[in-house]
Structure formats: C-alpha cells, structure tokens
Amino acid sequence: MTVPHALHERIFVALDTADLAQAQRLVAATRGLVGGYKLGKEFFTAHGPQGVRQAVGAAPLFLDLKFHDIPNTVAGAVRAARALSPRFMTLHASGGPAMMQAAADAAAAGGADRTRLLAVSVLTSLDDRDLGAMGQHGPVEMQVARLAKLAADCGMDGAVCSPLEVVTLRGLLPEAFALMVPGVRPTWAASGDQKRVMTPADALALGASYLVIGRPITAAEDPAKAAGRIVDQLTDLGAP
Ligand code: C5P
Image 1 (cartoon, protein in one colour):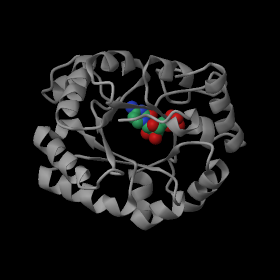
Image 2: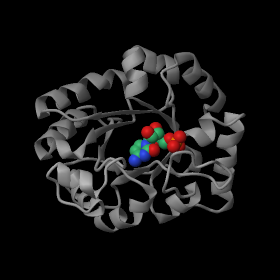
Image 3: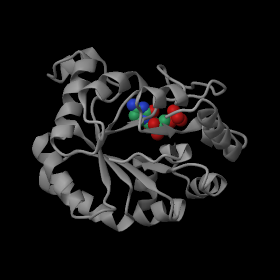
Image 4: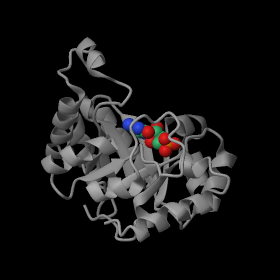
C-alpha cells in the first residue's frame, strides 16, 4: 500500500466524542492540515452513518468499529460501510482467518479506491495474565506478532499497533503492510492516560505509516495551531 509523501496526510485525528457539533468544530478547524479523521464506536453508536458524514464531510475517514463476528456478518458490514467510503476500517484479527478473508473479499469489490482494512491484534488494555485467562498464549508481544502476521497472510492491508511494536512488526511484515499507530505524543503535549508514548517523528522514523493523534490536537486551545505545530516538527526533523 502506498503511503502518502505529504507528512500531514499521515495524521488521522481521533475524534473521541459523541458530540456531533464538537466533532464538526474540530474538523472545521483542522481540515486540510491533517490527513483525515478517526471516528469510533462512541460516535457511530450515537449518530450512525449519516452523522459520520455530517461530522467529517468529504475528508478521509478512518472508521474504527473493530468488527469481530462470523465471516458472513463481517463481510456484510464491510459492504454496508461502502456507502461511507471509509479510507480505513478496523477488525479484530482474533476473529480468525475466515473472517479476515471474507472481509478482504468484501473490501476488494470496492475497486481501486477501496477501503483498506486494518487488523487490531491485542488490545493495549490486556496484559499477559488476561491472555492466560482467555486461553491465549502470551506474552502479549508474541501474540501481537502472531496475529499481525496472520492478518497480513489473510489479506489485511495493515494493523493498528503501539509505537513500541513498530520495529518488531516492520521486521516481520511486508513493506506494503500499513502500520497505523496511536499513542504518540509531541514533546510539548501531556501524555494523559497513555503510558507508553513516543513522539510522532520517532514513530514515523521507526516505520509507522500513519499516526492517530487525539488529545494533543483535540484538547488543545487552538487545534489548528497544534496540528500545524506537529506537522512542522515532522518536517523540520525530515521524518520519512
Ligand atoms: O487522545 P489520544 O491521542 O490518546 O487518542 C488516541 C486514539 O487512539 C484514541 O482514539 C484511542 O482510543 C486510540 N487507541 C489508543 N491505543 C490503542 C488503540 C487505539 O490510544 N492501543
């Protein structure tokens, strides 16, 4: 998958809100300064597909609904999402090979501008003990690598991963496999509840394809300025 050259296009702003007006304000303030917007279950459950387009307009959309169901149902959901033309969508790799392959087939029918499917491996809220309790083999890093490899083998276009997983996954996966990376913080922003963060420039230098950035932009007094500052810093550092 080709990653955009323009650095700002590699930033997706996480609109973690169920408030349509707030999402619209953030999009209006930052449109053109970033690559697109991520909306998730919170917003989608409150406002549905119509609300999604009201929020982001024609801007590239990362629809983070993390599907996990039987193959037929997930394929149907991927087809149904086509009306929104999301640039990216997510599904759980733990849904298994048949589910991912069915989703890939459904996405492929969208043609050249089709939605790219990103696999979610192990949620960062889970630790080795949780995996054991669920009958999964740890440690977490190994399970992340196993699931990401499986996702690539099953036709997924990429994965969502922590900045700390980028180096390992880059070494295991094809170059065209996109890594969408949240948990990044510019040096001047508070880390909030993110425990293991990395700067945007470092994450890109290590091989991240795209960055998901929420509060450093959305909670800033001036979101446009914050987005511009992040992109400028990437440019100054000559991030790849
Ligand atoms: O505000 P912040 O930059 O921490 O937002 C990061 C976004 O990425 C949120 O939407 C969060 O749910 C998401 N995310 C994450 N860590 C993961 C997976 C997703 O922070 N492991």
